[in-house]
Image (cartoon, rainbow, N blue to C red; front, side):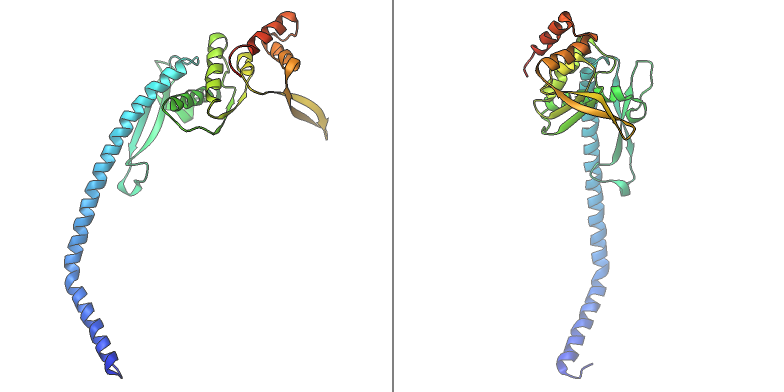
Length: 245
């Protein structure tokens, strides 16, 4: 060591530190093991508490969702959550279990994963119902929501209920709806018609055109009855006169 005395004493200090660390390592290892065990116990307790809250909240959400979709021509729909426990190494922000929303469309049908069995129209109505439930519980707004054929297979009072729900949502978010139901179209702030346009390059073209005033009244009349006679036009005007714009 050396050649200077400072370097000799420096090497001596390093050697002494290494010996001291070696002597202390068993004690530090035991302390680390104890800290790890305590942290694991706290994690298990937190995971158990989180899962209890998820079970309770999931059941409450399913009840609210069932009540909401019942007004949208899905009176027999039933929902539940299934949770699969995860290995500790897979725990994350979602907690100790992976959740799956199950759906039963009829009393005799066994619950199955919603993502596997719900039709497009059912999913649209469920999304509408879920958004309404979330708004009623203070959920955030300012999104853009798109509903495609959310009113498929419904009409009359149910169609009016769908229209009202969509209108309620539009107070908190931009709502774009693809619909064939005049009750829904009549409550919109802006009405666009999708129609075939002149062929371009040998391929059919699709055009999107906004309709206003008398043209919108005529379009609603066609949606109502396929005609634009005086009776249909009067009915269309009555629809446009209902509810806030």
